[in-house]
Each structure stands twice: as C-alpha cells, then as structure tokens.
Image 1: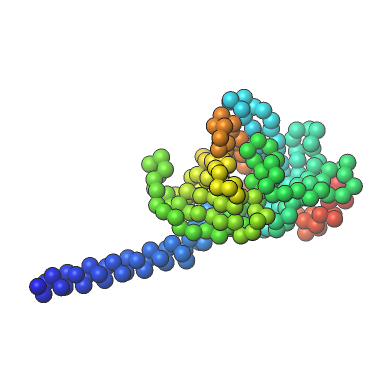
Image 2: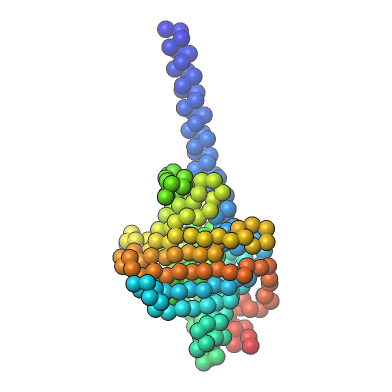
Amino acid sequence: MFNRTLLFLAMTAFFLIHMKVQVYSESLDIKEVLEKVDAYRGYKEPFQMDVKVTDYVDDSIKSELKLQTYVKDQSSSFLKYIYPPIDTGKILLMVDDNIWFYNKKLSKPLRLSPRQRLIGNVSNADVARANFSFDYMPKFKSNQSIGGVACTVIELTAKNQKVAYPKIILYVQSSGYKPVKGEFFSDSGRLLKEAYYTKFNQFSDRERLTKVEIIDGIIKTHKTIIEYSNYKLNKLPDSHYNPDFLPRIQ
C-alpha cells in the first residue's frame, strides 16, 4: 500500500510539472517562436530585397510582376515596380495597416486595402508585409507531422479588422522554426489559399526564405509563386515612407 501511494504521488508530481512546462511553452514562448519564423523573411534592421511574383493557371504563366522592396521595420515598406516595363516606376507604400499606390498619372497617392488582390493568389499585404508578428497574435494549436517533418502548429489571429486575413494556421518546423505551410482563411472561415514555404538560401549571416508556392483554396490548378532574392541591409530616407512625398520621388 505504501509503495502504491509513493507511485501515485510521483506520477502526480510528474503530471503537474509536465503541465507547467506545456503551459509555459504554449503561451509565453509562442511569440518568440513567431519571431524566429519572421527572421527567415528578413532582418531586424532596414533591408531591401527583390520580389518576383508569377501567376500560373494549369501550369501556364498567366502574368508576372517584379518589385524592388525596401523594408524599414515591421510596420513600413516601400515597393517599386521594375517589371513589366509598362508598370516600371509605380509604387506601393505600406505603413502600419495603410497601403497607398502611386504612379505619375495620379495627382496624389491612391489608398488601397491590404486585402486587395495584387496578382493571382497574392494580396497587397502578401508582398508589402515581411513578417507575421506585427499583424497577428499567435497561439499554440498542436504538434503535427507535415511530410515527415515534425511541426509546431500556430494559430494566428488578426489584431484588427484591417489585416489581410482574419486567421492563419501556420505550420513551422519544431526544430529551427522554418515555416513549412500556411493556411489562410476569410472572415467566414473559408479556406482562401494554402502557402508552401519551399526554398531557403543563405544570405549573409543566415538562411532566408526564397520561394513560396501559393495554391488557391478552391481551384487547385491556380498557383502563384513568390520568389525572394538579393537580400541585403539598406536604408531608404524616412521621407520615402510618407505618402505625401511619393509624387516627388524620381
């Protein structure tokens, strides 16, 4: 009887300790996990990168876009169109939850929605925002295997109604925290698209994300690929992040 009591107490203590660890890892550390995910998408310091977006229908290219992207911080980015030639010089500016579009034919910048489609399955926010942490609150959901890779599943909830997607389910490697897959949902809970983070390359001090394949939530033959290249530290003047200054940029 005495031995059984000791065994019961030992098992109870183990259970309580285990629960404490789980609560800690699922609530307090999950924000740090998301920050590690974001580290694959850029730098903490101001940086630039090239972004190429290619839209496919039934494996045939439907349209293509190239942008030179400058990221000031988590909330601000400046994007200049460099392809196709007809769009060269057009500008997208994102500051906080606001996006502006400008070209020389406009007298002043035009306000856009982060949810508005840019090309194919890609919204304005998909290319203008280089992190998840600014827009979403993370919550541990489960542990799951994706293609034989052990993953931590994170539920991301939008911090406000202006954010492009009200909810994202993000699958990240449990070791290293590379993003593996994202599921993006509408206000009604409908699956809009799935994103597969398929390629990473070394840039300066660490690996960076270089390819995302996005599959339409309904039409599975509709695919959009985002490719990132030429990551490097660089800072634009603060004036470039002021929408009133955009008409003065050459």
